[in-house]
Amino acid sequence: MACSLGVIGLGRMAQVILQSLFEAGQFNPEEVFGVVGKKNSVERVLHQFKSPFTVVDVNDKNAIDVWNTPVKILAVKPQQLNQVQEKCSKEFLAKLPAKPLLISILAGVKLKRLQSLFPDHVCVRAVPNTPALVSAGLTGLSWGEEVTEDQKSLVESIFKPISQVFELPEDQLDAFLALTSSGPAYLALISEALADGAVAAGLPRALAQSLTNFTLEGTAILLKKKELHPGQLKDMVASPAGTTISALRHLEKEGVRSALIEAVILAAKKSREMA
Ligand SMILES: NC(=O)c1ccc[n+]([C@@H]2O[C@H](COP(=O)([O-])OP(=O)(O)OC[C@H]3O[C@@H](n4cnc5c(N)ncnc54)[C@H](OP(=O)(O)O)[C@@H]3O)[C@@H](O)[C@H]2O)c1
Image (cartoon, rainbow, N blue to C red):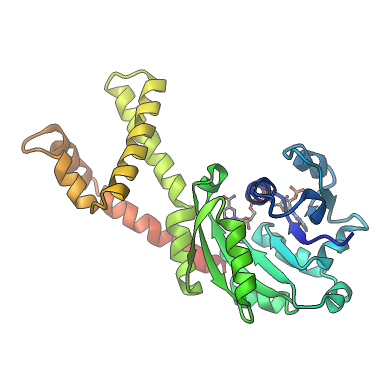
């Protein structure tokens, strides 16, 4: 039976997307054809799933069948892209009734490049982030040429179970990535540093980290639910001559605000350079 969904590269993010598609019943395991780089990855990948599906390594004689699917998720590392393109089967593509859809989650690889490497596909870029692992992600989507409304709906239905979905012009995807894909790392660093501070001030490590995580989570929910500007929340917390304002004064003196601004700008710049 010809498969409906091809997945090229089955690392962490592709596995999360696939798990949620199986859970939602959007694709059945027997409809999915996955390709990985190394033979010994096949079993490791399948071990992560409740139901088996077809997974082969790129050098398997059947790996070419992935090009016979009408929808593909491309989830290899950017440096593996040319190797994928070399294996692309024109013969299969010529036989498909319509241009198949190629959804790339590769950071920094532009639609123009995807379309030049895979001219027989309709290409879409999707930028998901790591909180998708717990269905709390964000995904930025940019559409390539010739994409139909049905294909747009299909792409959205793939990412909605694990993330909130935002359609963006492609020139905003680098900034989107610098904020949302790299953001969990910035916040993890801040979380660790705050917990270190609490340990230095006398709390046990596990309690310090747990309280830090609750504080980050509670603050995000409060900002969102009450639709507060961050400055309003800061002013609510900082009472005259109190503890918070003396801590904030120190953070401003050390340039923390400026460091965070520059971090996002640098990540966006790096993403543009990688393209
Ligand atoms: N992880 C994230 O949070 C995240 C978020 C947004 C976007 N992304 C993007 O997602 C992509 C994958 O990231 P990842 O972290 O999942 O990487 P990863 O864990 O290294 O996964 C890459 C996958 O590609 C397979 N592969 C390697 N060469 C291949 C080939 N020639 N043909 C088919 N499959 C091949 C690898 O198989 P082997 O292991 O057997 O080599 C592996 O399954 C990247 O481009 C990244 O920019 C990731």
